[in-house]
Length: 296
Ligand SMILES: NC(=O)c1ccc[n+]([C@@H]2O[C@H](COP(=O)([O-])OP(=O)(O)OC[C@H]3O[C@@H](n4cnc5c(N)ncnc54)[C@H](OP(=O)(O)O)[C@@H]3O)[C@@H](O)[C@H]2O)c1
Image 1 (cartoon, protein in one colour):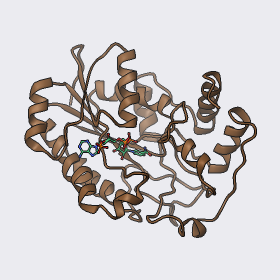
Image 2 (cartoon, helix red, strand yellow; image 1 turned 180 degrees about the horizontal axis):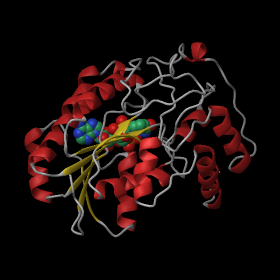
Image 3 (cartoon, rainbow, N blue to C red; image 1 turned 30 degrees about the vertical axis):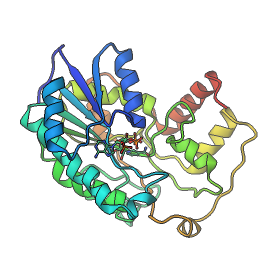
């Protein structure tokens, strides 16, 4: 779907969300024309009316049911979760399709977990690997909808994992694990938003479609993240570990742990002269930005 041109109008869906806020700030800093909306994605008439009113060239879909305080909520609110993450997400993509609008979906890579062919330290999951993690209802909805939504020729699906911002917002993965009483220690793919959000704009503007693992290259363990956090941001920080078995006693839904293969993303971004730093390098840069901004 070719969308090259200068008259791009971006409409961010889920406008009051965390990722949406970062994206809006980025687009405004780039001088782009940007609008936001909180219209419910599953309300077809309202979605069509909003698209007709704003007439975007690009929708950036940052809406999704993520649960509060966390994805455990989705276990007990299955209909609400499906209405947003399945019916709503598909509906918005479909309405965009009918109106010739490019739609970027901020999806999740939490649809995999390490297995025999993808063990810790082994090869990462590729975009073509079928989802193998259904330990949480949240992940199950996301895995199912992606499997069918990927056929829309106007749709770019970006799989984020454990997103990290340069502040200590409650949604930031680092904030979350720094506040837990105990943390597991497993290598994972992470998305440093400062590195990846500009890439999402580049890809949307080039009209890219299909599924992309949308993380920094490589995997980093919880202890490695917290060690860097202690070294750079908070010298007096301490934490305790526990095992996955112990963790399962204090959470309702399972949590995905995996490495995503970023080869496809890296080669696409190379076409645009854009590079995403390896995750350990990226975390160091992120924590240095935090420190420079006075975050403690
Ligand atoms: N943060 C993470 O750890 C993470 C990781 C990987 C992927 N993601 C995905 O990235 C996207 C953005 O995440 P986020 O962290 O920014 O989440 P967030 O802060 O919870 O924001 C999501 C926004 O979507 C809105 N929303 C939910 N259902 C909707 C619907 N049916 N129609 C319209 N708006 C709806 C919410 O509004 P209400 O509160 O009014 O419902 C909320 O403002 C989500 O799809 C999420 O699954 C997030």
